[in-house]
Image 1: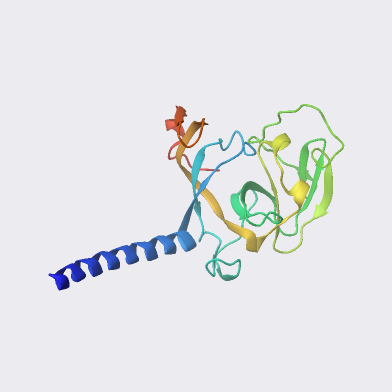
Image 2 (image 1 turned 60 degrees about the vertical axis):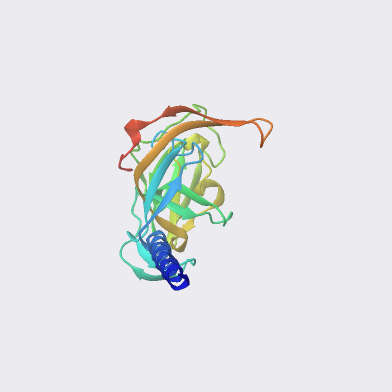
Length: 214
């Protein structure tokens, strides 16, 4: 009886261990889930979007480090990437690549210039019509060093990005946003926690599920 129970336990243990190893491998090297917590990428990405991020599209890193061991490609202008924040290192951010190594970036009255040419940015939202002299609306020019990327949010007037905290080193990039696998607008109401609480789903965005990100 004991040996039979032990055999069953070992079978379950091996199955669980294999599943955990596979899940860890997938998360470290292939794909990772990411949730949009803020509106800095509106209207391209909505608060409450859940994304899959391709990790091997650019490179392979040693797990739990930023050390690259194999490079396949490099982020290109227009890619939407997830990266470790250069200052708040415990946070992951998502932004659009505007400048790549060697590019000169300048912003004049909200218009972004890349190597002297104004960018056509149909994805950009400006929620404030005012022009400010601060780095929000007037920035640079600045030329990017090797392995440096200049990133901006699509919700341009409401985004904290490279204009404020600087460039993103290539080693900090987690991967490229690929597809929205879930999206909802949820309101969590907590009252007298933990005894009285409820979750109210305001809107399930079915039309966004399966949408490719670009």
